[in-house]
Image (cartoon, rainbow, N blue to C red; front, side, top):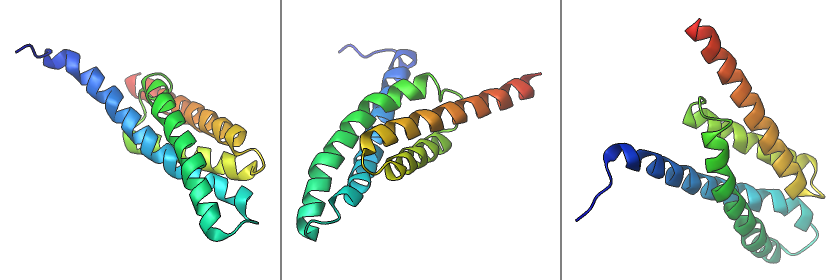
Length: 129
């Protein structure tokens, strides 16, 4: 039975890990970010709508965007910082622009990823010199 060499399987495993983490965190943040828009509706309806629409969309976007950002902007950032920082930026952006949480969330994610990537790239450059 053919098995890929370990050095070839690691990037695939890392990409799948980033995708899974992005889906879970994105789904959670998508649910929370949609709740302020549904404030006037009954609670059970708001939760169902937030879980189905916000959670599904957030999980889909997180599963796609997390590996891309992880392998590019956040390559030198520790995994915990990358998850917490981008999750915080996404949630802050989505809640600040609560009428358009998709636009705010994407802007917050991009801003957080860029700041984290820049910060750790500078720290790595200073450490290597």
